[in-house]
Image 1 (cartoon, helix red, strand yellow):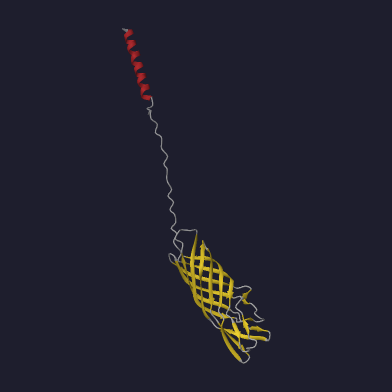
Image 2 (cartoon, one colour; image 1 turned 180 degrees about the vertical axis):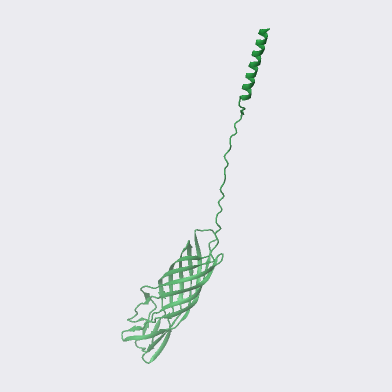
Length: 239
């Protein structure tokens, strides 16, 4: 009887210890939870570039060909003297132009200071040169329909030329005074725009009449200044 009682107590104690270990054991999961990285995409919004309202163009030009009007003094029919049309030395201009822009067309106003070339001596006779400040309307039409890096254009100017600083006619017998009138101005040609730089070549004319004031006589002749000008310019956009 004592053996049975001892065996029953031993079994009861073993069962209690086993149950206690089962309760104390931690509960674990056979699957591990792995957090996936979250990728945040940054959306870059490109700025909206608008076409400028217009631009200001500063331009400097060089006359690489030019000529004046001819003049012949026929008072002395035995030995008439005359002025030739050929030129020499430097001629050029400085200009500022302001444009309003559309899709392919630019229209604006311009003003220039023009230093005309000297007249070559013809039979010991020279002079009757002048300078000009034209005020003009100007237009450019872009002909770039193929998205080229450089934009070709055609250009035209039309305005009024204020002529001044008329030189005397120099003769072996002495100088003869002159005076120059104002007149029409125009120019036309082609050019190309690359970024803010532009180059163009224009054929133009300043119309003028020069009065000759000699001893006891007055005369007048057409003294138009024609030339071909190569210009380089820089553009400042107006937004």
